[in-house]
Image (cartoon, rainbow, N blue to C red; front, top):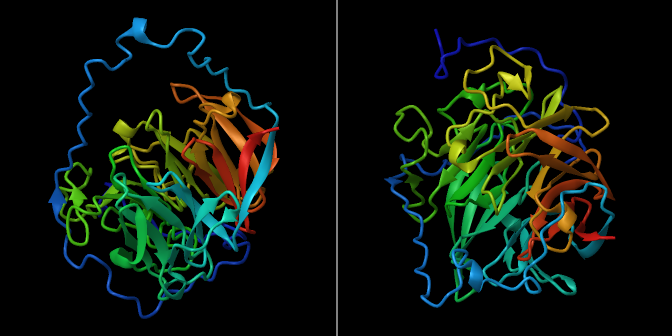
Length: 431
């Protein structure tokens, strides 16, 4: 008998005890099933819709384009070419705000960076720090174990704010909050997505708008240890996968017709990529569109995955057959996409990788194109340089410690912020 991936089912091996600080809390994870779960949404299979990218505006006849080199800026006006990436550049962290437990950040239609606090509130970043909450879901959010308000994203056209949180029954929930005339309307909201979680850890929860203006959600394998549900390689469940939906194409949402498994009757049509253990932090490079996913390991490997956007649909990152490049249970899938970089779990770099972002700001040209990341158990911010062929050129410490790093955020200028679960929101600056 074979499963959906063509591999014979394998017995679940006895895993080591769940290690401390796998993600949000440096506390032992309580691996108990959630009781009295709400009905998941949608009850019926969501509609499948064709999603066409917005057409590029027609250029003005008098506009300067890259095709008119003679009309471009003079040498005096042109921006200098960015130097080669340099991980030895002197950096510092500048504290710009404090919250109880910041967990995510995203830029709104007003160009302002908004910060999520784990308890369930959203705050704009002002010159004086974190502003008053513009959304408060604290009465509808639990912070047990690795749960809470874990992600936020703004619709590409600025008309909705999407929040990823855990409801009091332990279900992963996506809430859409209306934005009218540039103002967030906290009382005008709807439940977009809800999924019961069997355990209190590996909930994932990161949210991003992709290069195609669709909404992406990272979900862990359901939790406990060793993937007891075998969710990582099971296409019938959204667990252990990166999902892609059109939040306004249907009620409550629609599935893009280009999703890789939309025509498979037994597959969750929302799945965009799979084989993930706990992809609690992922991002898209705003220049190349490449997808970067950091996946927390079980016992052996913390991994960072990078894949071209046009090759990402249907990608199988290997869990639970593989842990990084090492076998975990069963045979390596034929379509396994190996990590671009991995390091030892419980080694000198830490025990739970915190995925980051590719630096595309202007204040620190030496970091241009460098992937910035950290580890929750270590705190040292690190840089990873990967060439066009996917080969690691260099990786190393950047000489700054962000504390209990749970996320990175980018402002409208491309500058990067480090979010410390202990409360600090710090911008990476040149020293």
